[in-house]
Length: 424
View: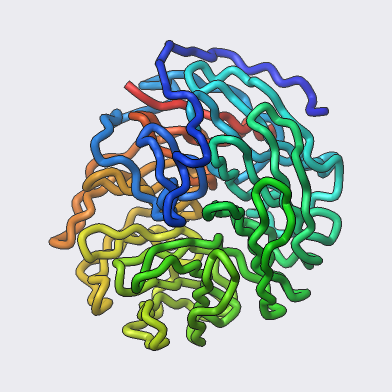
C-alpha cells in the first residue's frame, strides 16, 4: 500500500455532471463521440488535443486563486487525468515497491473513491523524466483501459468503473530504453495498444470485453513512444503511428496495412495531428524533424523541416499547425506547405502537450508555468501566464469549464504530486 499522506487545504464546491456515458455513446464509426464535459482518453475523445471551444475558463489561477479543489496523489506518474462523468482516473507508480496503480477521484469534490493495484512490483523505467506510469487511461463508459511496462513485458489491463480488474493481456516482450508513454485508444469493439521497443514490439487490437488479441502487427526492433491515433481520412478510418523510421497507416479493425512510408525519425513521442489531407510526424532522435505526409496511400512527403518538436504534441486550427518546441519556442506553420509564419520564445523546457480551447493555446512547461497564446497565423499574441507548483510534465485535461492539472510540489528532497481542479 501507499504510505498515508496528509494534504491540507482541500476545498470543494458542488457541481452536477452527467453520469458516465455508455459505450455506444462514446463509439461511432471509430471516432469517440463524447459529451463536451468529458475527456475520456489521451488528448480528448477526438485524440487531437482540441477541447470544447464554448466552455468558460478562468484566465488566471495559482495555488490559491480559482482552485475548486486539490488533493494529494500518491506515487508518481506523468499520465493525464481521464475524465468521464463525475469521475477522474489516474495511473500512478509507487517507485519504492515498483507497484503500478489506477486511482479514482470524485470529480465534484476531489475525494478519492478507490485505488487498485494493477501490478504489485516490476514497474520499468530508466530516464529521469520517465515514470512507471506515464500513460493516460481510456474509458468507454463501461470499462477502463491502461497499459504498463512490467517485468520485461508490456501488459494491457481492463478494469470496471469501480476498480475491479476484468482482464490482463500481454502484448509483447518489452525491453525498456527510456520509459513507456503510449496510451490506449478505443475503436468500436477494440482497444488498441502499442508496444514499440528495442526487442521488437507490436501494435495490437484487443477485444474490449475479453482482452483477446484480435489482430497484431509486428514492429521494428526500435524504441518509440507515440500513442495510436485514429482519424477518418481519405474515406476510411486510419490508425496512424509515427516512429521506428516509418509513418504507418493501418485498418484499426483488422490491422491490415493501408500504407507505410519511410521518413519519420527513429524515436518519436508526439501524437500525430491532421488537417484532413496530411498527417504530421515530429521527432528528436537521431535527428530533429517535422514533416507532412499525404493520407491517400501515395506515400508522399509534402514538406519537412529540422525543428525539434520531440515530446510535446502539436495542435491544428484552420489549416495551421501550432507547436511548442521542447526548448520553449512556440511556432506556427501553414499545414499544407510548411511555411513558417512566426516563432516566439516562451522560455522553459516543455514535456506536456499543448491543448487548444477555441482560439487559445494552453502550453505548460516543466516548471508548472502555463502560457496562454492566441492561435493566430498573423503573429504571436501572448494572453497571459499562470504558475502552479514546481513541476508539471503531465498534459492538462480541459473540459466542462475546468482544468485538471497533475502538478508536483517540491520541498527540500520531498516531492508530492497534487491533482488540481481549476475553475471559476
